[in-house]
Length: 320
Image: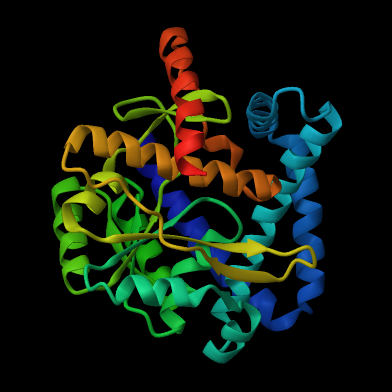
């Protein structure tokens, strides 16, 4: 009963929030809205104790002695500030023409995606909860690419349907990650048609997966992206909508990641999962204040951490 009421409340709040946000974008100057978002983010940083504690702990663990406490807190504070700005930008896109969105979010590296599609086996666009990840599928779709976004939908069916409706308003067609078999079937169909599947693959939590090195520690990474890429022959192309120093956005597409396809399935999946995680770490090091630091749970296994650290030294030589 309580869970159902909470889900319905979240659905109503989301619907009202979107409606209010779109109204505000139409009525108020946008620079006012961004200032309001910055103010709410500062207040949120003080009030969201769990976010503040876990984010600063993960940032400090990732960068070891490289950053002062002040720098760590600054990164955590700015990551929340950037997220609040992301939400305002969604409202702006909902109230903008396609041409305006294209002008507001230029694309860098489009040739890498085109080259990957020319191979004819589909493309996994690999991304992360970094920058304005909400708009990645939107911007690719506006460029004319056939794009689907893999999402972990809410358990409440009505709320999930509501979110799908809003994604469609910003040109995003979705594939639900659950049930897993149906998701795999849809992903395979997308790739067989030589289309694009956007996968946000940077949640490192407890459970089944592949132990991999990240920032000198060990995390459990999902094996799904590497496994699917190997099974389908799809190219893996990293891309993120990155916030620039002036707060403008750019969709930056990087060269295709070279995967190990030796035919030794388990070894290939592990090696390629390490490579995907290595890319993520390099991305976050470039933009630490644009990543959601809540997504990490370090794997507290001393023997595995030691072994992985040794392997990390070997991998760095191969992946450079």
